[in-house]
Image: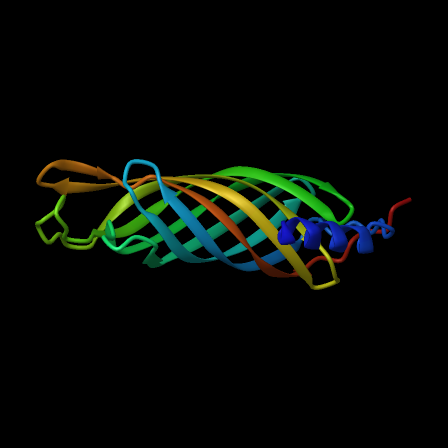
Length: 190
């Protein structure tokens, strides 16, 4: 509830300005905390996330994401280690200081399950393919800063376990602060 009130307040304070922030040549870097909910396991994990994004046009950008597993909220964790690197294209619907976006990002994960009652064998860290679907919203509240929230669905499997593949799919909710600069001079509109 506090988050909704804060977003509404920030949006109202900048709503009077019609300056377009999303332009070709915009370079963004974001840092966020991600709360995840594993789809096939009973585990809620916390990740530190970061991304770097470059806009080739007003409605298209390319973004690379890195996610680093910090901890779980359960006493019996499913993961011992997990790091994910994703890269892909995002489509944008910018409107003044607001920007809604969605896209797909293939990538890789470096995963290692935690030995437990289910997986009593110690497994090595392995590089596996991953795939992410993302959607979100950015609010450009100043010349160099933005606030972002989003949802991600991350598909990944740990292959090579004695019981077969271990499904590590996660639904993530993310939010954080970002910084941006325009790297190209814009041509004046006629």
